[in-house]
Each structure stands twice: as structure tokens, then as C-alpha cells.
Image (cartoon, rainbow, N blue to C red; front, side, top):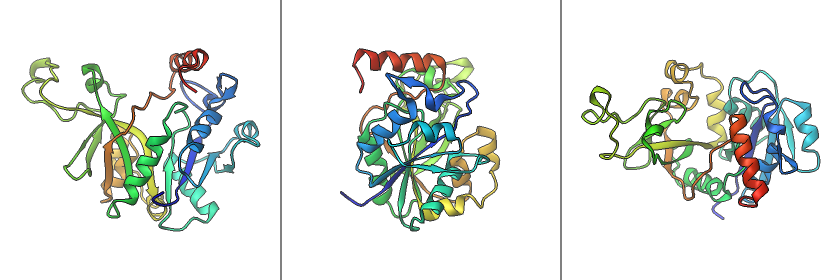
Length: 256
């Protein structure tokens, strides 16, 4: 193993579209427990769930260590910084942030994003992406697009269809055959020293416009490593329809 790393799963009870989402039942287990189990299959030295809600902590008792955090964090990154401080982690330790609504995330991609950050000491964050296969995804603002340079450093993230194909997209055109578009996958690896700096920065103008917290890091000159994921990453659970889809997969035995 290249080095030890930690995984933290931020889990909030409140959700606009799916209240109580972390505790949604997935084949007899709360969703957040399913996520934690996936993380425990990775090479992480330790896996924690970070929550501000006692109901989530109670549901996870005996399954995974829980770190209670404040209830006023503006983002998951801020919540992870509190966890790092509470655990007394060293500045050069690596934490992987796995979203609490990704119950099907492959362990291999968790290992990959941690290894990528460890291999790129000039970066303070690492994340992953995958090809957008359908033109609808390019123009869907809920699908975050990423562009990056030849060395795997992110140039920008946006809800807009970037890169903009000047000719093919002119006058309402949507021909994506002449290029490649990448969907950002919301998994991050951070150095702990970066987390301590991040929480001292005010939200950036671009971050507020796009509602993308990684843009706060880029606005402050932080390099983010990004690479195509080594395995496909199934979509997370954001809506009741997503929940039904994953429940059906688990019930059929196609995922476990």
C-alpha cells in the first residue's frame, strides 16, 4: 500500500429533495451504513462517518466510528476539517471525502483518488471524472463538467457545457461528436493542511455563482489533480426516483 489514508463520510439528516436521506432503507440497512461498508472495503486505515444528527449516530452504533460535528457547516469540506481537528490528524495526512449518498461507490476509486494525491505533492486536492456518454449530460446543469490539462491538473469546473464547441453548438446546435466532455465525480482526497487553510477563506465569487465548493480552492491558487476513474461510478441518490432505482438493484442482487 502506498501510504495510509482516512475516509470520512459526511452525513446530514436534512435534505431538500429527500429528507432523512442517510437513513433511507436499502435492503435492510441505512444508506449511510451501505456507504461506510463500501469504504471499509478500500485500503483506508480508518473509516469515519461525520454527522451533526444523533439519529444517524444511533443508527450506526457498532457498525462504524462516528464523529459528531457542528450543525452550522456550509459544506462537507468544512465538516471534514472539524473531523481532522478532532482526531488530531497530521498536516500531511490524507483524507478521502466520500459522499453519504453513494452506496454503490467502488472501493477501487477510493483507493485511486488517495493514491493520485499522494503521487502529486504539488496538489492539495485530488478528484475524479468520467466521460459523458450522452449529449443531454453536456447541457444538464446538474452534471458538473471538468476540464483539465495534459498533466491532470484541473483548469475549471462548471455546470455549463464546457468546453464550448464554437461551431457545433452555434445557433442551438448540440453535436458533441467532435470532442470529449468529462463529468466530475464528487469524490475528493485532501491533505489535512489544506483543510485547515480552506476554512479560513471566504466563499469565492465563482463558488457562489456555480454552487461548487471546489472553486473556492481554485480561486485561492490551489492545484487540484483530476483523472478518469478506474471503474464506472454509479450515480448517487438525490431523489426518490434514485432511491427506488438503487433499492431495486439491491433487491435483485445486482449490487451488494
